[in-house]
Image 1: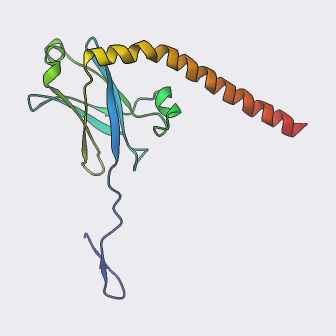
Image 2: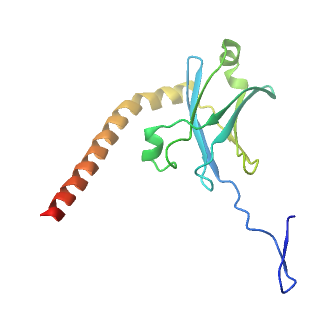
Image 3: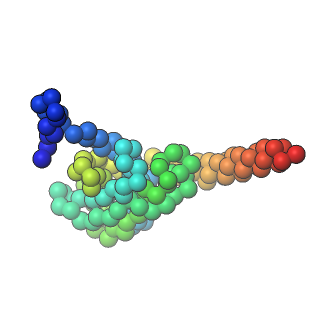
Length: 154
């Protein structure tokens, strides 16, 4: 039943919250494809990641792996990463691969762009220093909270 009948004979559709998918492919390291995807409207849901080549589904997984950088950046609880092994023929066919996220709740689809190799290399060059910076910021936040609690106790 897709509608609800109310006392005043007014027909209303149920409150449907559409999917708001967001994500990206982070890297193709050797034969391993890494990335993340989530539904901002359903942050507890694991999105299905489907990889196709020339229109044929060749691999599928769930985006349910935990990554601290996702949590730090407000991507739900951080459990929206995926990693999947590809065989050599798929790695060689990189330009023909299509990576799609699919919401199990709504069926909505979101195509994740596979960045060019030089784009991935540039991101990798800044990833480690940036991660160190965020580690230090997180440590400062923890120390600040401890200092505030100590002040309250005094």
